[in-house]
Amino acid sequence: MGDATPILQYYSPMWNYFEPKEAVWYRWDLDGAGAWLRKNGEEWKFALQSIPFKSIDSREGGPMENGEPPDLPTAFTVSGGKTIALRPSLSDIPYLVSARNEVKIMPSSEAWFAIALPPVLKFMTESQAPLHSFHPFTVSKTWFGDKTAGNLCLSLPIELDPSCNREQNFNQEMDEAIKAKSSKYLNCRSLIQCKLVVRNRSKEPIETKRLAIFTDLLSLYEKGTSLVSDTVVIVATQDGTLQNNIDSAPYRGLPKIHSAPNAGLSEVLVKRGVSFLRSIAGI
Image (tube, rainbow, N blue to C red):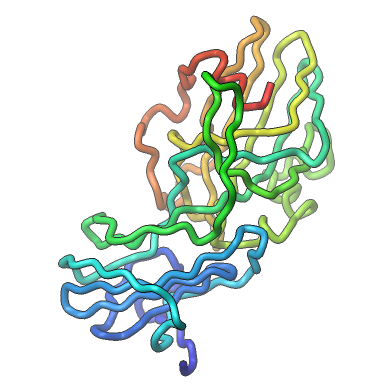
């Protein structure tokens, strides 16, 4: 298939727009998954290779001129446009993750979790028209919550460890804590790094084992070579209810790669039913 030569004359980051040559195949390495693209006039041709989420392997790069893809099904789209990008976005349905052990959060305390989320990838032209989308990392789906307040979720095979206030490295922007407890998922550029904090402002302990991440108000950013999202904040209040907020303040000034559809609500309480809110933290 020949040498894989990065197209550095167009850009360095793998998510930016570039102008492909006519009738030339380009490849993206996506931590074990892969995507191929070829433009021929107004015909765009795609070949995609997905892998199970558990099989992820830290290895990424692209776009690279790399000859034809292996024996994979292809898809065609007819559209104008000169430049294109492979752009990450979040799933339309929630992500469900589990703590390694049951976590009890006492009153006036909080716990942080570092989560790596598989993206939905979209080929988009400069006009923001999506030509094709796919899931590079496949996971199972599961029902979370009761029959009326529950949700269909993507079930991620990740076991989370919390980070706590006064823990070593806690006050060093959480990145140091992430490095201290790194896993193969937290080191992959094709995944979206998300921070979640659960604060107990109630008078009773909170016990939780599973956490559901709802993505409708989350924006995505580029931080160095990583993809990051807004921080999800869940607060148990003194009146026994749960509040769900999105904290975008730590990411101001970073290049935004995906904007939440409800822009301007990132620091406002997300008004949900109480039963729905309780299902977020599995309470």
